[in-house]
Image (cartoon, rainbow, N blue to C red; front, side):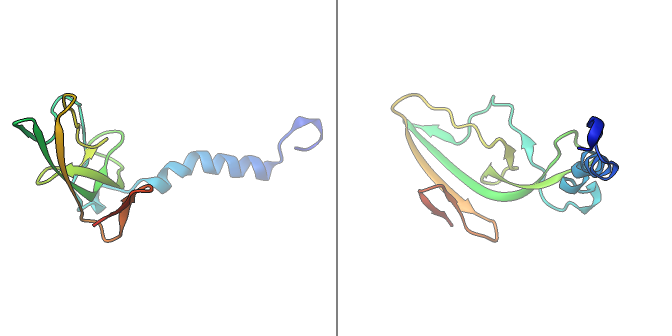
Length: 124
């Protein structure tokens, strides 16, 4: 800050540039997306198939296009979980079971890079 409590013009211009143009750095135009659309999970439908007290759940970690504002406009490519043969979901498929239910979970990584749960190991 300069004397008198005024911000230098260069600092003010830099701040204004960041505020105005930083959202553009994180979003891409609609035409460039060939990835599946990441759909919002409304948390009404539980994932997997429950049979005889065992939940069978097959998840896929994949890349998709997430539209934070609307289905048209800017998007961001993100990694998201999906049930096998379904669209990726934000914030992932809902896993809801009664206490004591066994869960048989298989996770497949369809990304071109390794992924893993912090401290637990790799997802391949």
